[in-house]
Image (tube, rainbow, N blue to C red; front, side):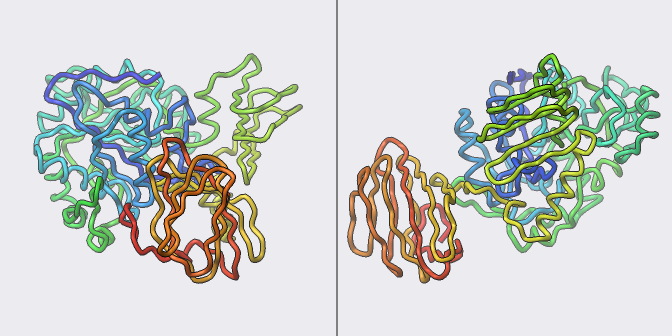
Amino acid sequence: MTATLPHPAPSVVPVILSGGSGSRLWPVSRSAYPKQFWPLVSQRTMVQETALRSHGPGFSAPIVVCNNEHRFIMAEQLREVGITAPRILLEPVGRNSAPAIAAAAVLAAETDPDAVLWIMAADAAMQKPQNVAPALALAAQVARAGRIVTFGMTPTRAETGYGYIEKGAPLAGYDGAFAVERFVEKPDAANAERMFGSGRFLWNSGMFVFTARTLLQEMEKFEPAVLAAVRERRSDIDFERLDPTAFAASPDISIDYAVAERTDLMTVIPGDFGWSDVGSWDALWELGPQDDAGNVVSGDVVLNNTTNSYVRTDGVLTAVSGVEDLLVVVNEDAVLVTHRQHAQDVKTIVARLKKANRPEATAHRRRYRPWGFYETLIMGTRFQVKRIVVEPGQMLSLQKHYHRAEHWVVVEGTALVTRNEEEILVRENESVYLPLGATHRLKNPGRIPLTLIEVQSGPYLGEDDIVRLEDVYSRA
């Protein structure tokens, strides 16, 4: 259950980083719709849980840094949970965490250079949010004193999938805060056991707290090229777009390498937040409610003589019998089966799929758009059938095609169709034909979602055969 964390004024500015593709959680997580947009740990999506964790009294509106292609998904998911005024920064290309954080600090500093920023990944889980409030209150005090704070998670096992922080001497005047002795990369099993047993090492959560002024000063000192690359941006409807040319010139570097491992201001606050980066299916097995046999299931699953396994299906009935320690994930177009000990190897499978140019590596059959979504039902040599859902009041772009004609059949709701100079109201069980080259637009004028079946026919059916003439979402 998500808990809002109360904090004393002045308020903390949450900064949510949403740049990863979550390839180790394939086939559910794919770059077109990655893990932060899925409800993997609770009924809400991971980015919704993250945003609600830092929403309410004591917090300013969040700054969210995300991929340009995810902007409408992000805005809609935040709106669904009542976060209506986020500042969403769009990255034209991926450049790791340091440029993303620097861009957020520049934006925050324009309003208040001494604003305290809480940097969080969009796709981490916290099962003990009640423990975060005192740690964050202390971190904010330390940050206002000009230091950079990270949260180190108290380890519960010798984990090789996380980086570590060795805590140093206590920080004078701030009980519970320590200087950082050093950062350690993800260790092998022997070193993980040694660090876990020493009691001096903490898991690196990747969360930071600092003022915008402090971060920008340290960034200017160590990575001025990063700072120069993120200063240019422009407003676009509800978004802030970083300049593509300037941002592409930024070094591809993490905040750890850019600042944390080089600054003299680094501080760590240990915490037990029930934190997980949810970096693999095995992590979801650990986080989920286990039955008496140690199994975690999601969806329409039947188990027989199965132990210590994670089984998830997003649709089709999935039966598993006579196995142990397995991860089974069934998606609409792909199935993953692997031993829990090899959960990290899923990333290798995704890399092989990408090398083979398999579309399943990066996208689902359902593709989300600002107006709703579509999904491919049947694909033939010269025809394709899609299901299209348009949300109330939304519309597609005014467009035309050079290589295909389309036939729309409304199965739910009402469509207002523009076809050249005509406007046609199409109701349930009615259809309309759009010949090749016709200028057309689809709008949902009603109060319920509009669902239609689209039949495309022609020699080329790619999505790049769309010539947008007008678009309310600035895609033309």
